[in-house]
Amino acid sequence: MARRREQGAGEPALAQLQMAALMRGYLVMFLPWVFALLHPGHKPLVMHWYLHAMCEAFQKAATGTIRRIVINVPPRHLKSITSVAFVAWMLGRNPRLRVMLATYGAKLSREHLEKLQRVINSRLYQALFPGTRLTKSGIGEQVLSTTTGGGCRCVTVGGATTGFGADIIIIDDAMKAEDITSEARREELDRFYSGTLLTRLNNKRCGLIISIQQRLGEDDLPARLLEAGAEHLCLPACDDTETVHDIGFGRQYRRQPGEVLRPDDEPREVLDSYRREMGPRDFATQYLQLPAALEGNVIRIDRFARFELDEFPRERFMKLVQSWDTATSEELRADYSVCMSFGYLEGKWYLLDVLRGHFAYPKLRDLVIAQQQRWKANLVLIEDAGAGSHLCQDLGSRSDWRPRPIRPEADKITRMVGQLALVEDGEILLPVSAPWLDTLLSELRAFPTCKHDDQVDALSQFLKWAKTHPSWAPTEYDPDTGRKLRPRRRERLKRRPGRRTMD
Image (tube, rainbow, N blue to C red; front, side, top):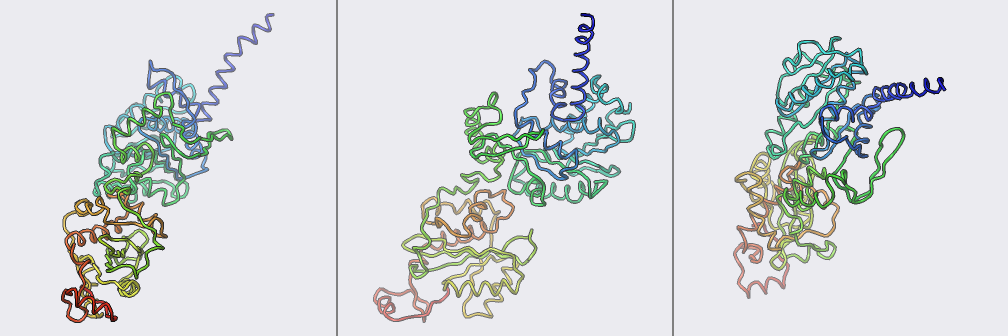
């Protein structure tokens, strides 16, 4: 009996030792305790499957399985608490590590460091990780230092990082949601990442970079990391497709279509109310992790009339106009050159073709000529800026037709919005299907936060011309004199072939 009592008395101690070992070895076991410490009086953390998936992604990063990862999760889904827990957990395992945490503002950085300090100075943490202690200086110059030379430094976008190398860089909310429409802010963050953060890695080959934040736009920082080959854990608040996620210990979770992340706090009806209040664009970006809302941001895709491309050959159209937005770089990240070909028929304009690519100037000039000849274009519009201005002069002296230069006015959004009446009135038709259609629709949906907007520029340029020249397309002209044809003269000319002229 005495032996049984001794064994029973040792079971709680053994359980505590086992739990301590699990907390030291696995972030998913450490996170609930961190949450309880930082949120006293709250109900215990419900470890939904998505938290297991986030912890597993961090775990893989900790073991070196992956070196670059993007975790996209909606607001208020514990991404910052998980980041703080990860930093504390990594410093507990190796107090010499140097971690850099990048955020959009000094206040948020301070909050992260205060939470981290609170965790590391707690009794349980010191019992779990006796080799990790903070220096008595506390938070100085946005830095928490360990007694062994490691620590965490918080930096803000555009701030100084001189003198601090990092083994791990964590990017947690590097941009406010309202700043994504600012091209200057996006460029500032892009420069900060490539020109500052990347240079601070102590080991460029083994250094770890983790981006954990909500999506804000098609051209945000997560998009750049993904483009460079980072692993991706995407966790939309609700998803209409089936997805499979690693959740640790060799397990996978199969998320069913329509399943929400937090059914207890944010069921589908709550998310639907968010969508109505926020609007489809912001909700799709921040909660669904879709940087281009399906209904479109500025340009409503559902307002375009549609047609079957195969049923409308060039011969059916009375006139054809091409609109060029030009660039002269072959670099993959540079702007594109775009040519859109529109056919006119019975008061409506049909988009028949889109050419898009990176071309050096000689190739671009040849393509403008080739496209005009291929489609027998009656008019070629070219933006009168940069390479377009040179093209207008060059082609005017080299070919038997002259392009029409179009001087851009106002900003891109104003130029596009001001011409949308033609779309709303059903006068602009897109094909039901075409090889180039998906790329075009993606850009239209994402505008004005899309990475490239050259197709939008070519479209707005054409729309402006069509809006200001409503009588040009339905009017026929004498091929010899260029004058408007009277009815009788028009009928006589239709009986004999005549050459097309550029207006």
